[in-house]
Length: 417
Image (cartoon, rainbow, N blue to C red; front, side):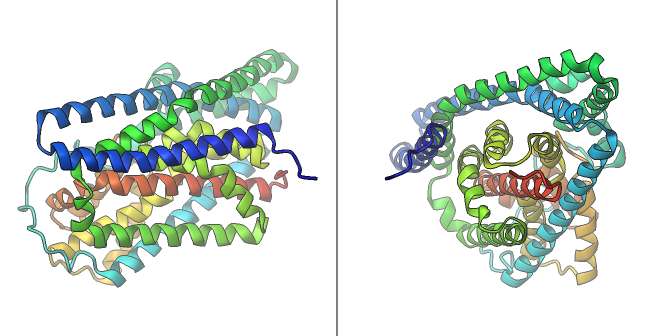
C-alpha cells in the first residue's frame, strides 16, 4: 500500500513546479520580446510593467522580514533560557560563517587563476576613470558599526536592516529570558506573531511564480540571449565555480547529516529557485525559515543563525568578489602576485561584512578593492550588463550556504530532529 503524500509536502512540490515553469516561460517570452521589439518604446513599456510586478513581490517579502526576524529571534532566545546557550550557538555560527567565506574566496581565486577569463576577453575596455555610477560608500569600521548597531529599532525595521534588528532582538531576547515568568506574556505574544507572519508568508508565496516570470522575462527582453554568448565563457566559469562550491559545502554537511542532505535539498529547492528567479536571497528568507523548520532544524537555532547568515554568510557573493576583481585585473593586463591576491582575500573577508544593508553591496566592495590595488574601477562596467544574470546564481548559492549553516549548527547543538 502506497503511503499518502503529506498535504504540506504536496503543496510545496506544486509551488516548486510553478516557480520552475515560470522561470522557463520567462526566458522564452523574454527572448521572443527581444527578437520582436528590440529597441522600441513598446519593449520599454513592457519591461517597466515586468519591473513593477517583480517589485510588488519584493515589497511584500520585505513587509514580512522585519517582524518575522524579530519575533522568531526573541522567542528562540527566550526559550534557550540563558545567555551562555546564545553565546555558544552564535560562536559556532560565526566560526562557520568565516570558514565558509574564506573557502569561497579561495575557491574563486583558484578557479579564476586557472581559467583566466579576463585574458581572453575580446571586447573594448572602458576608459580608465569612467564613472561607474555606484554610490561612493567605502567599507570602513565606522560604516560596519553604523549598519550593525541601531539608533532606533523603528528606523531599523523601516529600512529592513536585518543586522540591526538582530542586535536589538538579541538584547530583547536575553532580557526576556532573564525575567522569566514576568516576560512570559510578551514571549507568548511574539510566538503567536511569528506563526502569523509565517502564515502571511504562505499567502505571499502564491504570487512568487508571477514575480519570477516577470524578473526573468525583463532581463532576457532587455539584454537578449545574445548577452550570454558575448560573456558565455565568463558566465559559464562562474556558474561552474558556484556548482563546485555547493558540492563542497554539501559534501562537508554529509559528514554530519549523511543522506539527509538529499531531504534538505528537497526542502530548500523552492527558496533557491525563488532566489535565483528574483536575483534576491532576501526574497527567499521567509520561505527558507519555514522549510528548514519542516526539515527538522531547531527553530531556536534557525531564528538566530539565518538572520546572522544574511549579513555574514553570503558564500555566492564572496566567490563573485574574487572572480570580479581578478577578472578585471586580467582584462587590463595587470598581474597580481600571489601575495597581493592573498592580501586581497583577507581584505574582502572583512570589508564585505562592513556594508551590510547597502544596496548593491557586492559591487561597492569590489569597487573599493579595485581602487585599493590600483586596478581601474571602470572595469566594473564590463560586468554591470550581466550583473543580474550573475546575481541570480550567487543569490541561490547564498540561500544554499545559509541552509547548510543552520543545519550544521542544529546538528552540533544536538537539536536536529
